[in-house]
Length: 88
Image 1: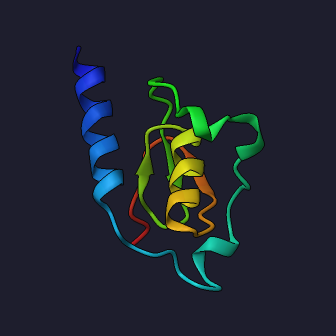
Image 2: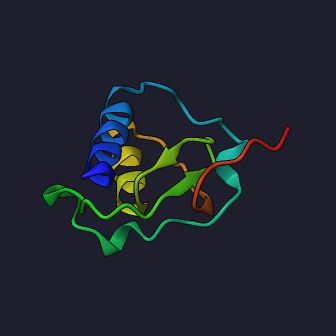
């Protein structure tokens, strides 16, 4: 039940976020997400398998990162699998 709540909160946060990726900056690094593996028109699974985007935002899974890229018309890549950590 807790995992479902966390997933729903993260999904809501991603839907409300209106930020942009850095142009020519962080979006150029990282791993290319395998967006062709997902049917984004049908939505994403609820499986929590977090990825940290090159925009330093946490996405619930790779599919959600691809979905947000399409929705916001940007190109965020995968910085690392798992949680985001500040590299300050």
